[in-house]
Image 1 (cartoon, rainbow, N blue to C red):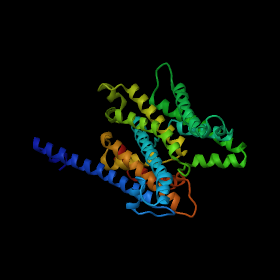
Image 2: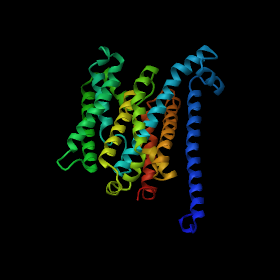
Image 3: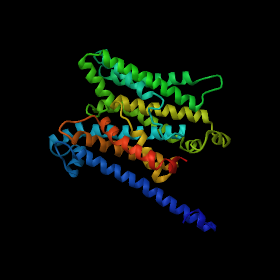
Image 4: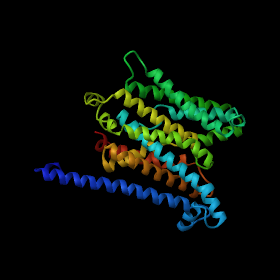
Amino acid sequence: MDGSEIRTYEDVKDLKRRNARRSAIAVLGTVAISIAAFFLCICVGNYEVSVPDVILAIFGQGDSSTVMIIRDVRLPRVMGAICVGAALSVAGLSMQSLFKNPMASPSVLGISSGAAFGASIAISFGLGAGIVGSFATPLMAFAMCFATLGLVYLIARSKYGISTVTLLLAGVAVGAFFNGLVSLLQYVANDDVLSSIVYWTMGSFNKVTWSSFWRSVVPMVLGIITQVLIYRELNLISAGEEQAANLGVNVKRVRMMAILGTALCVGGAVSLAGTIGFVGLIVPHMFRMIVGPNHKLLIPMCIFGGAAFLMLMDTLAKTAFVMSFPVGIFTSLLGAPFFIYILKTRKKEIWE
């Protein structure tokens, strides 16, 4: 039944029931896929483990070597992929809705570039050997993420306030500036430092441990919660800021919350795994095609779908070849063609 067939109140109720059923199936299907992806990624590797053995190992039972591989090596890596995938996907959804631009992503404000520069500084100057030890690189990445956000806001600000377009342009300019600084550090660094910086900017979960996971997960969770709290306002803003303001939405406050939530998501993700591109660009598009523009459905689907996507990409990166590749390479190689397909075939259907 479509809109042209609605003639009575019962038709309206029937249409609502059908839409609710489709929405529930879509969300539950995404959850099921993410659960399947979790067990697949935990089981697959140089040492394959069955699902029953994985479940036993998670609870500390079974063969000691299996328990060590699952609990100390694979589980923190998979949990890191879950959190980063969910955080980047929700942040990408928020940016696309805020800027009403299908090209928008979590890096649109330059905060990913700023975080990468912070990490590059820590690596270049050996800050990891100081008092903060292994916390130096993620701390610098996270600090520069928010410093970049402040700089973008400072540049975009004028006596007339801050417009969304000016904010976007300032983010592009600041991001390009920090990308240049990262390239400069790579140019002057010695071979060992250069390889570490390049590896970080490619994005990888190879070095994720429980300690690095726990120090990065809190900002990502806070960032996701921030986006969840404003899903109704994002629904209205995505249709136009003036219309949203006329309906009582505090556009400035919602914009600030969306950007702050994105900074928390990106800062936590970069501090854990480095720079991983295209996740926040592709996943929201994928689910927008399935369920439409309603953020009440898009946010949970991006959380579980983004987690599943990055888990599978990471598993592919570590098993497709003899050596383990950074997952950022695979998200770019697979993400770019998919995005081109969407741009050429489905853009008008989704955005216009």
